[in-house]
Every structure is written in C-alpha cells, then in structure tokens.
Length: 252
Image 1 (tube, rainbow, N blue to C red):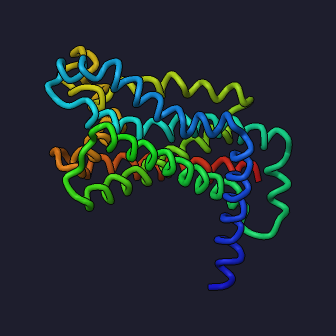
Image 2 (cartoon, rainbow, N blue to C red):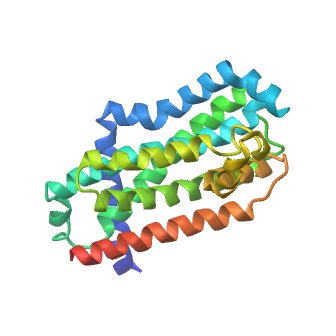
C-alpha cells in the first residue's frame, strides 16, 4: 500500500498542488474559471431571462444554472490546455519524467487540479443560483448535481489535457473554441429542443451538455433522465484518458 502511495498517489497530489499554486498566481485564470460563469449567469438571467421564460414557458434559472455549471469548467480547461503546451515546449514535462514516480503523474495531477478548480466554480454558480431562485427538491438532489458536475469536470479536463498534449502552439488550442460555442448555445439549458430550428434538433439532442443539463434537472426534481448523461461523460473521460496514454507512450 505504501509503495502505491509513494509511486502513484503522492506524485499525482504533488503535481496537482503545483498546478493549483501556479493558477493562484495568475489572476486571468482565476477570473476565467470562477468569474466568467458567474458573470454569464447574471447577464443571461437579467437580460434574457424573461424572454427565455416567455418562449419556453419554464423558469429560465432552472436551466441556466446547470448550463453555467457545465460550461465554466469547459472554457477554463481550454486556457489550461494552452499552459500545458507551454510546459511541453519548454521541456518541463520531459524533466518531470526523470523524477521518481509514475510518468503519467504530471498529467494526472493536472486533471485532478482541473477537477478541483472546476468544482469550485460549480459550487459558486450553484450558490449564486440559489440566491437568484434556483430550486432543488431535496438535499440528495444537490448531491446528485455535484456528482454529475464532478464527472463532467473530469471528462472535459481529460479531453482538453489531450488537446494540450497534441497542439503545436498555445495559440492552436483556440481551435476548440468554436466547438465549445456550439456546445454552449445549442443545448437544452437555454430552451427545449423544439425551440431550436428543425435542422438543429439532431445537434441539440446529441450535445453532451444537453444530457448533462437534463440530468441535473432530473436531480433537481424537474423530470428527465440521468443515465444518458452518465454514459456520455464516462465515454468522454475514457476517450480522453486513452488518447492521453497513447500520446504519452508515443513521446516515450
């Protein structure tokens, strides 16, 4: 047990702490990961909340809070991917491989740090959401929402860590932003599928954020299914980690 802790767990925690300390000294990262989701929530609720409610017949806050809980970690992860490219280009990751412990510890530590940062943003958005009128049926619903959010953070941080491992330059990571914009706006967090043009229905239904928002809505007691979101998020996490493993092995 001690051998596993010393060779795997401790190095992962060490690298996670290193990444978190680096972010704490970078105000832009803090603003993007924690401030942006809150600002987006406030802007959309106060400027477009009544329009969304009129168009859908549902309280806008119930869909917008889960949506911002999912998109915040996603956009913050894109910025972190750019930082990972810089570490690669400066040879820092190569030097880490000379240290005792697993060779994947630096990347696993980064994914853990991403999950912790993402969950901090999730909790902040949820707290502000409650102040704005977001409601959950019971305490177990809150536990379910946080559990889904944690899985979502791990899934997207895994995928974006892979992006950081294959991007040629830090600027190249912005190539994922158009995809993120589609995921953010073409989902059921804004309105039901029927509210979108018919040619977008397939995109909205297949959007993993739609499934994640619906699962959180189900946990809040508003109906919906949880299993499709779990399948989507587990699949994304597994794919991301497999691709990270393949890239790391190739670089060895």
